Each structure stands twice: as C-alpha cells, then as structure tokens.
Amino acid sequence: MSQYRIEVRVKPRPGLLDPQGKAIHHSLNSLGWEGVNDVSVGKAIYIDIDADSVDAALETVEVMCRKLLANPVTEDFEVSVIDETEQTSS
Amino acid sequence: MKVAVITFPGSNCDYDLFKAAQQVGGDAKFIWHRERGLENYDAVLLPGGFSYGDYLRAGAIARMSPIMEDVIAFAKTGRPVLGICNGFQILCESGLLPGALMHNISLKFESKDVMLRVDRTDTMFTKDYKTGQVLRIPIAHGEGNYGADNETLKALEDQGRVVFRYVDRDGELSDEANPNGSWNNIAGITNATGNVLGMMPHPERAMEKLLGSTDGLALFTSMVGSMQPS
Image (cartoon, rainbow over all chains, first blue to last red; front, side, top):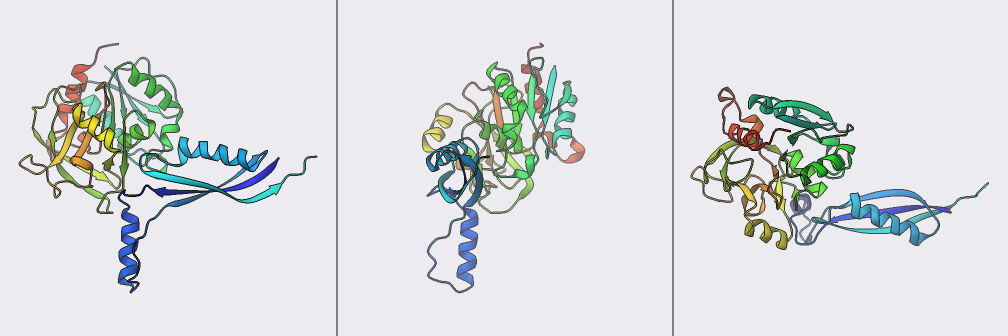
C-alpha cells in the first residue's frame, strides 16, 4: 500500500463559453501581449489517497471525477500521479 | 397543504420562500439538509442562496446532502418540486433536471428585475398564468447561464419543457433581454413529467405590491392549487 498524490485538472469543455478565460485574455492583450491567441481557466484539485497501485489510485479518482469533481455537461477532466510515498506497515 | 422548504448551509432565500408558501395557504416547514423524510409533504421547495459557499460548483456539494436522496424519491412520486436560483443549480447537479448553469456571459453578478414570458400554462406551477403573459421578477445570480448538449436542448424545446424565457417588455426574445447568456433565453425548465421546475428568477421576491411586483404570486397559487392533500 502506498500513498499517491493525484492531480485532477478540471477544464471547461472546448467550445463552451469560458468568461474567466476571456477576461484574462483581454487583460493580457491590454498589458501588451499581443500574440496571446487563447486563454482558458480550469482548476486543479490535489488528492492524497492510499491505494495498492498507481492504476487503482487513478481509477478511484476517476470515479470521484465522474461523481463529484467535474460536471460532465460543462467540464472535462484529466488525472495524473504527481507523487508516491510508500507506507511501511508495522 | 404541507410544504417543505429545504435549508442548506448558505441558503439565504429560505425565509422568503417559507413566507411565500404561507401567503398562499401552505403549511410551511423548514427541513434542515441533514434531516430525512419527506413522505408526508405535498410539495418540496429548494431555496436560493449560496449553499456551501458555491464551493467546487454552485449546488455541487448541496446535492450530496442526506435530504437530497429523499428529494429525488419525492420527485418520482409526481408531487411538485420547485428549485429557485441556487435551488435550480442543485436540481441540475442532482440530475433531476438536465443541463448546467454556467457563469453569466457578462462575468458579473446580475441583480435586477427582468421580464419573463410564461410559455407553458399547462404545468402545476403556471396554471394561474396566461400563455404569453409577461412578468416582472427579480434575478440575483452569478451563474445562471443555462446550457446543455444539443440533444438535451432539442428535447427540452420539442417536448415544450421551457416554461419561462427572458424577454423584453413586449414579450419578444432578444439578446439584450437575456441577463446571463442562457441558450434560447431559457429562465426555467421542467423535467419530462412536469412536476420538477427549476428557474433562476425569484418569484418569492415578487409577492407584495409594496416590494415592486406581485407577479410571482400566481406561481405559488398554481402550485398549491395542484396539490393533492396527503
């Protein structure tokens, strides 16, 4: 059993209105960055979870995404492992 | 007529809704989100506000509350469930209504009176209105931009489940009259069986002449008039 730190990235679905991204895009343009073609804003959620394997940890977190962390109507999600700590059993 | 007003941490229109239900003769009770049991009620109301501070997404945490299981079971019995503002967001998150409420296209929190057109008067929430009637009702939300996938939107229109739309004073659809960017100016929809209504505007704030409008009153008289005593 290890503890995994999983990063969940929740992003607005392509083509859907992303007003926050749009506002930041405008601000970047007005600060002088003219080559900025698109900005979108999502969120990152970090979950520390005990699991028997990387695959098991990712699978569990994907279920969490479908059930709670992302809204399938408006958002896509990606999950990845960013850290693993082995637990020494006593 | 027993009416349950569900209160979540962060609800702030619960007293308005309670008062509105009483005003039309309902025997209103507050139900805390951790309580269980709605079998003995005739209608369930989900109030506006900012349940759980809108953390994660508006309504996303509230729909995990213990009482929501009972709200879903209650809705299946065909009795009326009304969600206003945050209540509408919770109904979408819980799957009782399709689609989602996204950030307003303006990026602003919109708090003002809007004009609504009643497109369906054959529902248990609108039978005391006239078809095409234009109402003046307040809104107060940051995430009221209704959208869904194309298939869902087509089904809503084909099945006549859009009950209220944002319009101008003459009852015409326009972008200017749409305060949040909702697709097809949608302000309120029902589920397929017509007993669950979600809407962003606040009819419970349009119940007294002194406060500017009584156009919300007929929604509550319609609902009470449709209820079967338990």
